[in-house]
Image (spheres, rainbow over the protein chains, first blue to last red):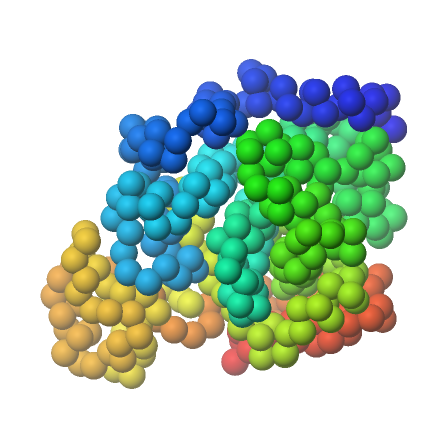
Length: 279
Length: 97
Ligand SMILES: [Fe+2]
Ligand SMILES: [Fe+2]
């Protein structure tokens, strides 16, 4: 067990984005989106000033998996259509790619697949805020990235332990750290000024029954995470499928046909990676 | 959703993504390919397009199903996990048909 109080850990996590191990683009992005005085328009301008960032954001929103009808041709168009939360989420999502590849290979695919599946389920359930559920899915495991960057040796041990003991990485984390990636992710979401519901989804995605104000959204990300692991797409720190919360599963009330369709979209979404980062 | 190279296209295949040139839409997604469309695609020098249907997985079916069993090894008998596993198994099997 790492000897650090939860308060110190939180301070360290919130400061991590300023560390030299974090690429300067991500550090800058974190500063921009965590600044309450910055407007959507200014964030759009920030993206537009970076051609690589612009092209990645546009490729994602125009990808088949995103399913936005019609073509979004500029960042300013995207900010108007998709809103602040999606733009902020995508910015973080594309800028952590390399870090994830180098620390927990497969976590990016896991995150993107979770975003796509979550959005689809949210739409099926008729939720108006399905874009926010997409972002929560995209960022749900960002706490893992922070833990592995800050405590590489201990995290490696936790992953090994999970595999040997046949437990999930979430359970192994709780034995090695004072808290887990879900809580850490929620700290970051708070720092980045995401809405309260999204913070709660990230915080409780492994314990969906604890969510009070966003129980359906939390159940959605909880199930999407499990479906990705069940299908064997991406990697999230351990080789096992976590148990689904029966209450969450029942609340979503999905048919076998719904599940099949979700699996299909998840698999298709994996292709965007090549388009984004290998071309 | 596999990417199929232009010389392997056949009439009856359906586009999973629109064929575009820059911002110009050439053939809309969902279109069923005809000889004419295929010729058009080749003539424009487009090397490959996305076609509806399962991508061909990288590992043999038996291995994919064995991996599925391993992933579910500790949870297969928990509530709803048998159902999820069954749906995923069917989905994976379909990738190979
Ligand atoms: Fe997680
Ligand atoms: Fe996850």
